[in-house]
Amino acid sequence: MKPHRGTLILVLGILGLVVCAPLAIAAWVMGSGDLKQMDAGTMDPGGRGNTQAGKICGIIGTILMVIGIIVLGILFTIGFAAALAQHHN
Image (tube, rainbow, N blue to C red; front, side, top):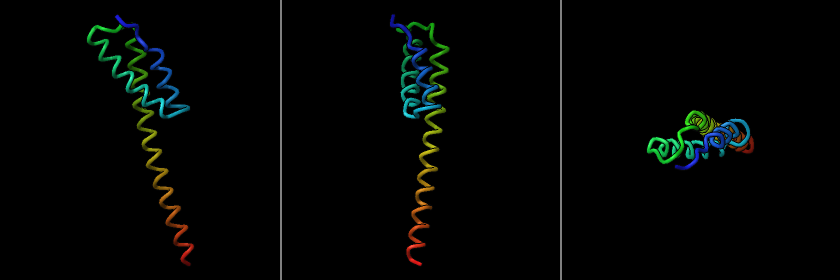
């Protein structure tokens, strides 16, 4: 039986929320895979709580990152349009 990586996934999820958003994706992917292995009985289920918490942090961090990218894209577009409008005046 493989050892769990619950603490690692939780740390990645928290860092993904606070410091580096792409780590949230890693936490989400790793957490999903590890939970499937725990359900299949091939991984130690002792870290299920940390794995689930890390996966949830990863999901939230990923969603916030996507929203941030969309907002930045909108702000960039508005700024670019305003610069073009001012240039034409």
